[in-house]
Structures are given as C-alpha cells and as structure tokens.
Amino acid sequence: MSFGLPPVFAYALRRLLQAVPVIILIMVATFLLLKLAPGDTVDALVGDMGGADAAYIARMRAEYGLDQPVWVQLWRYMAKLATFDLGWSFVYEQPVSVVLMDRLGTTLMLMAASLSLAFTLGIALGAIAARKAYSLTDNLISTLGLVFYATPSFFLSLLFIYLFSVKLGWLPVGGIKTIAGFYTGWDHVVDVALHLIMPTAALSLIYLSFYMRLMRATVLEVADLDFVRTARAKGAGEFRLMIHHIMRNALLPVITLLGLQFSTVLGGSVVVETIFTLPGLGQLASQSVVQRDMNTLMGIIFLCSIIVVVVNFLTDVLYARLDSRIELA
Amino acid sequence: MTTLDTDLAPAEPPRLIVFWRRYKRNRAALLGLALFVIVLLMALTAGIVDPGDPLRRAGAPLTPPLTDWATPLGTDQLGRDIFSGIFYGARISLMIGVVATLVAIGIGVLIGALAGYFGGWVDDVLMRVTEAFQTIPNFVLLLTLVAIMGSKIEWITLAIGIVSWTAPARMVRAEFMSLRGREFVDAARNLGVSNASIIFREILPNALPPIVVYASVLMALSILLESALAFLGLGDPNYASWGNMIGQGRSVLRTAAYCAVFPGIAIVLTVLSFSLVGEGLNDALNPRQKK
Image 1 (cartoon, each protein chain N blue to C red):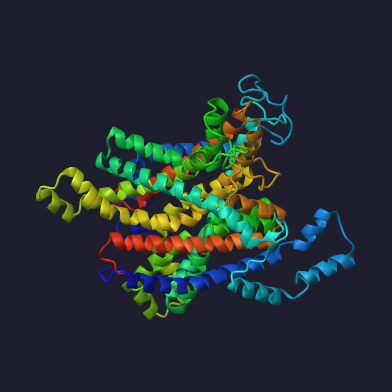
Image 2 (cartoon, each protein chain N blue to C red):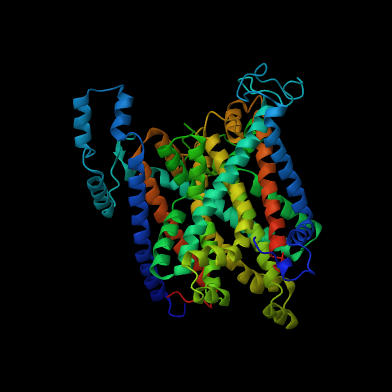
C-alpha cells in the first residue's frame, strides 16, 4: 500500500472483473433453476384472478415472453440484466429495482448494526478471555459463546419479544418505525433505533460467538510469538502490547471470517426480518418465494450477490491495511 | 480403515482407545457426548414412549405443563402433546442433520478433491462454482430450492445439503493441494495407480480428519437451517419438527410461552451437544493443535 490510491483502484478493477463471471453464473443458474419450478408468473397471476380462459392465458404468456423457448427467455433476461434492468414485479406492480431500493436501506441498517455489534463485542470478549485463559472469566465468556452459538436466531427473537415487549413493555414488537408516529428529525432516529435493538441483538449473537471464539484462539496463538516477547522485553506495557502488537495481528483471521460469513448473515436476515416485520430484503425474499414473484427473487439474489462481492472486496482492503506484508496487486 | 497401525507396531494401543483417551480429556466434550446420547435415545424411543401420531390431539388445548400426566410438558393450541412432539422432533432433527451432512460432505469431497488434485482449469472452474454458491446467501438459496422442489422432507434435506457443501469443498481442496505432492502419492503414481484410486484410496483417507471435525458443525448448522425453515412454515407439515413447534408457539407467546420454550431448549441443547462433540473430536484427532 505504499503507492497510495492507484493500486487499490487497479485491485478493485481486477476483483470486479473476477466477480463478473461468478455473478453471471449465479444468475444463469438461478434462472434455469426457477424455470424448473412448477408454474410460472402467469399461473400465479391467473390463480390470483380466480382463473381465466385458455386464449387469455396464452396471450398473457406471449406478452411476457413466456411462450418462447427457455434459452430465448434466458438470453433476453441476461441482456436486460446487463443494463441493470431487473424487469417488472407483477406482485408489487413496480419495476423490481424500485421494489428493491425501497427495501435495501432497512437491510443495510440491520446488517451494519448487527455486524458492528458482533465484531466489536466479539473481539473484545475474545481478547479478554484469551488474556485470562482458563480462569473463571474465560470459562464464563466461553460458555456464553457456546450458548449463543447454539441458540437459533428465531428462538432468540421470540425470547426477546416475550421478555422486552410482552413482559416489560420496553421495546416495540416489530416494524421499522411507529406507524402513525410521524416523528421527524432526532425523534425519528430514536424511533428507528428502538425498533432495531431486538432484531440486531437476535441476528448478531451467533456471529458474536464465532468472532469471540476465533479471537480467543488467535490471541492465544499470537501472544506466544517471538515479536511479542521481544516487545515485552523492551518494556512495552501489557495494555500497549495487547492493542498494538497482539490485537493487530490477531484481528486478521477474524476479518477474513467476517468477509466469508457476510452472505450467511444476509441470509439470516430473512428469518429475523420476517419475525420483526422489518421491511427489508430478507422479508421480501421469503414473501417472493411464497408469492412466486420470480423476477423479484432473481433481483434479490442479484443485489445480494453484488453486496457480498463488494463487502468481500472491502474486507480484503482492510486486511491489507492491517497486514503490511500483503500488497494489493 | 483396512490396515491398522497395529500390524506394523504392535506396542501401540489400538487407535480407538488412543482416540477415546484423548477425547475424554475434554470434559465439555464428554458433556456434549452425554447430551447427544440423550437426544439419540429420544429419537430412538419416540415411538415407544409415546406411540401414535405426535400431531394428533392428546388433551385439552393449552394445558399448562406439569398439570396432566398424559401431557407432562403441556399441549399447544390444537391440543397436541409437546412432550411427544419433542421426542419425535429429535428423530426428524437427527435424521435431517445426518443425511444433509452426508450430502454436503459428499458434494464437497468430490468437488474439493477434483479441484485440489487436478488444479489448473479444473480447479478454476470448480472454484468459480464454489464462489457462486458462497456468494448467494445460503438461506435465500435454501428458500429458492424449497420453492422449486416443494416442502417434502426428502427435498428439504437435499436442499440443506446443497447449500452447505462449500466449506468442506474448500477444506478438502486445501488438503489435496498439500498432499498431492507428497512422496506416497508420487510412489502410487509411478506404480501406475489410476487417478481415481489415488484420489479416493491414497489421499482422501489422509484428508479426512478435519472433515470429520467439520461434520459436527455441519450437523448443527443443518438442524438450525431445518428448524428455521419449519419456523417460517416452509417445512414438511407431515412431521413434528422443533422449528415448526416454535413457529406455532409464536401466536400464543403472550399466554402460553412454554409452547415455544420447550422445543427451543431442545434445539439449543442438541446444537450445543454437536459443537461440544466437535471440539472433543478436534482434540482427539489433532492433538498437537493448541487450544
């Protein structure tokens, strides 16, 4: 990273070019897979209308291009996708891109909040557990980690709702803001934040346990290395040693894991958003499956893939920033 | 395991005993094993402890726990016995856990072995496919697969396997890449052993230990995925499933939280048992690795 910005741009470009075939592969495979499903959009629409005559159905199929051979449909879809045209959602009667953009903000907020919580708390607890290895504190933290790991997010969500909404009445049960609250400015921010507390906690605890366990293991490993001993011999205080020498190196595997798991966390938001009726991409995904809104489902997969690629790129850049041995090339 | 080390070195105790000695050093792993045995017994005895369909009506709706001997953990809003649901749910969870794990490891070993052994363009193509699978959020892919294939339990199990194979594939690939250049592989190749034989009989047995450990993680993840699907009401409605019980319990959370809490505890303990057993296996199979 000694050349400033340009290598990062070159690296970004190269990564982008690598990601294109992967995303094309994903979209082609998903398209063909969805064609295997019994029933198409027209069937679903006709079902909603309570039936229609054969001539009308045929006309609708022709209109949507569904009467064409699969490969023609695939070609048309991919050609449109190349211009970022995701098609039309027949359920929402809007372009898919508009539907997705409506939902993206909520999901990104949930992701950002959950991952920051999981990451900061995870590395802090992991580091503490490692420094006090095999003590009562360590056992307590490690046990907590195991329990978090084993508790499914939907069960945790229900426990939270039962405790904090039903019993204590502290937090709202669902939604992203108070309906008919008409809050503005700061009040609006607080309102949204209150709605995000339980979903964030429910989604992040399992990942918190991952980061914590990995952090504990790597801190233990790094703390034994020669350069730490050297620094200690040179009189570095324990706190400085931890922050500057151990943490910096122990963070690397945790950041890798963060990047690798991002798509899993995004998947986990399906369940959490559904429970807390958060209007995000995850909730949209499960609704699209039920409503057979294939264009929207394809759009979600496309958008999620791009988000995952971008996040993986960012974690790589972060990794290179922290580890000076690695050059982005 | 066709040839044992004991043939060559009679002084060493059998592998299994060494393995057990190392395993039992980890107390948490012993607890995990005990929990696992309990869940296994529940799964095996479900039909004996409570014969009949767990989805049938067994008592008055919403009977609280510990009030009626026939339904010790109470009944849900349809009068179904929660105790019996938990026993039968253990059966479904374990079955899905085992089969989905086998599917995931089967696909993962095949792809990882081919990519790692041959390298070159085979590796490039297979790794792009692996990346594609890793890029789609696994639960979204799972939903899509279930939407296509339907909610029959066989298809759900297969779908869970299909969304979970990438991690084992990468592990097997890494092992193969480091093992393929070893002398015993060269020796086999020079003897004219076929590629298939080298892959499956020479390298694979050496690449397995990390996969065995990861299998316990996969089991836990499979059980979590199935319960999440069932919770959303997308599971197979013909079987009692813990996730489904929790999903149903959600609507009576205010008045009868136990409907969701008991199956929830069952999931937590089962997943916990797998991860503890996994740690024990890790200690026993990789004794030199630091904890």
